[in-house]
Image 1 (cartoon, rainbow, N blue to C red):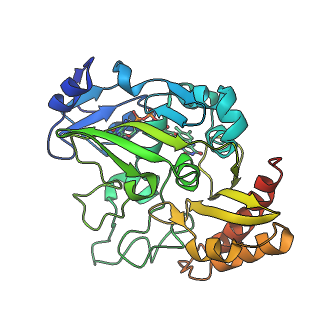
Image 2 (cartoon, rainbow, N blue to C red):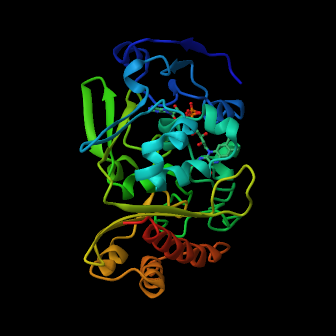
Length: 329
Ligand SMILES: Cc1cc2nc3c(=O)[nH]c(=O)nc-3n(C[C@H](O)[C@H](O)[C@H](O)COP(=O)(O)OP(=O)(O)OC[C@H]3O[C@@H](n4cnc5c(N)ncnc54)[C@H](O)[C@@H]3O)c2cc1C
């Protein structure tokens, strides 16, 4: 790892001043569980790290009844998992955070860090960037080891998958993200936070190099059934092959409103809008849940070695919907 300067600001204004305007010049440091491993393989070589964990406004988990939940971006996953209101009303978030192994990562890894973590693509982690090519210009992902890559949203040059397990749950629950930057605070729907880079100089979110994801706001959710279902290759330290998160409201026994989001299948979390539309007005049962999975994957474009993920995603959707329906409303 290259030597770097360590800055420990106590206010958000100081933190933003300490961040550079070019990606890679400086990096935001939260728990360091992702950033430091990337620095060790020279995946990023910042001259300065800016620790944000001492900034009070980015800390804590607060619930205001009839209003909603506020997650400070530096709250660690363990605190999210053990929070009684989160357990009761936002169980899809708990299910997603519990999937992050191990307890050491849950104790150090933060909510903001999970959402901003860099791709796990093995070409990317080996220093070949988003769009790896061999000496003759062949695409190393399309022609290579793409078993863990995207099956949706991969028509451009990026084929890695969004690594965050929390992101699908937050998008399904209609969270908003509050970002602090040079111009102060701005707020956007969670769904608009993630982008697919088309150039090596870009990143996977709409953050500017001197922006900080400060807090996440979730609407009141006592009448929302929600669940996350992950399919994993192994229970140990690893990311899911596929995640499905769902949040829905029921009226007179039928689905009135639903959000369905897949993770780990595309360069961004993937909202399944056609499947959502089709679910409205339906009773939740095995057939409607299965049909949602089928519709959601209609447009899948698997690569040479990952068509198995299509079936996994269909099953994850079905099980997430059926699991949400057990939520007890
Ligand atoms: C063995 C292992 C298994 C894992 N399994 C899973 C899994 O199943 N699902 C899953 O989702 N994740 C998984 N993770 C990832 C884990 O959730 C992240 O490493 C962790 O949440 C990152 O948080 P952090 O606070 O350590 O972030 P850091 O490592 O400090 O930062 C990560 C990145 O985000 C940026 N960043 C951090 N916070 C902010 C902020 N507030 N604003 C702007 N930028 C910010 C940093 O600059 C850096 O680029 C796993 C990690 C490991 C090591």
